[in-house]
Image (tube, rainbow, N blue to C red; front, side, top):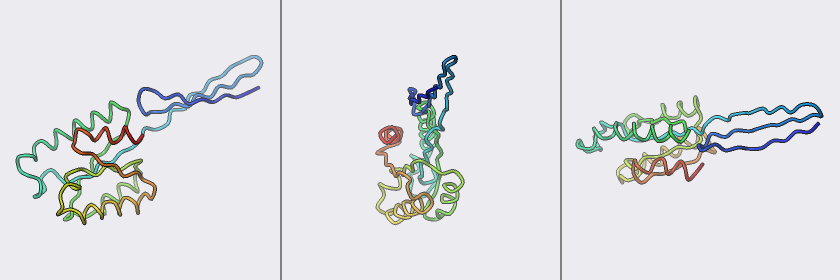
Length: 152
């Protein structure tokens, strides 16, 4: 009797582990599917006063597109809206309830010098909830999926 295990990666980051056990009379193959990577994108609420009014309606559309891209790649995705005014307690609780493999911090936070302290607070909150979580950055909504793909 012998056992052979191999990793088979599908087109998406969903990984399958195939375990084949062979005896003199039978061969049995068991497939174990591992959960997809879970990403949390954190950014300002679309109606935040620092987001220009002309941009606000485009945010929901962009988030829907990002969600569809993550789903197409086999990733699990959640957008968490937070601001300096709302604080990060809800964000920390979310990460404790559903640990993420990576946190993506949106350019709306990173690109605004007024939000530097808030950016630092996000990183601290993420690291306190999940010490080994990956911190990722995009350059625009269109590159959010690229940040995930180059990391996992």
